[in-house]
Amino acid sequence: MRSRISVDEAQDLILDAVSPMGSETLACAAALGRVLAEPVASRVTLPPADCSAMDGYALRATDLSQAGQGSPARLPQVFEVPAGGSAPRPLVPGEVARIFTGAPLPPGADTVVPQEDTEQVGEEILFSTSVKPGQHVRPAGEDVHAGEEVLAAGTPLASPQLGMLAALGRSLVRVVQRPTVALLSGGDELFEPDEIPAGGGIVASNAYALAAECEAIGVETRNLGIAADRPEDLEAFVRAGLSADVLVSTAGVSVGDHDHVRPVLEKLGCEMIFWGVKMKPGFPVAFGRFRDGPLVFGLPGNPVSSLVSFLHFVRPALRKMSGHRSLFLPTIEATLTEDLEKRAGRRHFIRVHLERDDGGFLATSTGNQSSGVLRSMAVADGLLDFPESSTQLRRGERVTVHLLRTDLLSRG
Image (cartoon, rainbow, N blue to C red):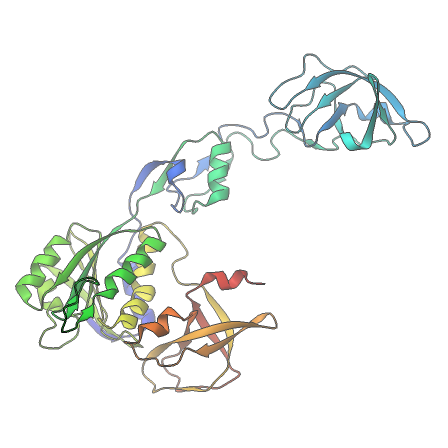
């Protein structure tokens, strides 16, 4: 088992141990946020025929070759082609057809003149300008041809992709399965929010924060509850989580007298891959796996340490298992507004506020960086990446920030 490794080493070890899940078939209406397990090829050509891009009149461009403001062309309207309909017969030279957006061009027509560029006089339509063939016409196959690959395997499904699938006549789609996560809290001092005794106690808030992160990336969770600080009690809870794809335990992964997670896991056959990551907050992070069971993450008990560790280690694993290729939090470059110092040897993630400045961002610490101050995480916009080997960052330096709020990127 490795110990006291860097953040990058820990991420590499985790991702090397993780593979995408199998696949399943879902209704497209239920596939938002999922990832395609196989490429999607079109069975149809879209549009299936040359069609009108405007409401107006379909005709031959040559019939308007002499049209002008002083001498408009006067052509009879002989029939109408509604959207979803078809022409009753081909157009012959010197005729026009009323046509609506999306309707197929009548045989013999090669262009469309918008309604607003015409004038109707009785049964005739007046045209004051000449036109080119193909004007306001969507050619057959402009969108996609039958047999053409439209969406590649590994594509996340958002509204444009689901709309495309519907346009192709697809009601079902093959997607990567999502992992299930079992969340375990540990400690005699922990209580559910509505069960705090009169003498006081600590709310098991980690399970709620981590469940929310899982839900944000579309992963199903199961809260196993709070295990007491006894090996036999913890073992029963761990066994209850072995049916999940990933087991996440908060607290009990350090080296105190009541930190029983590691020995219990090893007793049950878990191979521990690493323990301890050179980062702050979040040093006591553990990772392992059962041969025929779940991946296991042991996270610190302090609320900020637990959440930061989850974001850097568990979240990427879950996204890879779900089929995503973009695994990590998005990052931006920002300008630091204050001096920061630390000891070398650990990579720090500083909670910061972000504000826009001349098209860029300014990063300012949220204040108290104690791993128990959850409020500093609740008001943070991002995590400033303070490199392991560095001891100081100066005001005005450009720094990397891992975004906690991606809506900041869309602000004007």
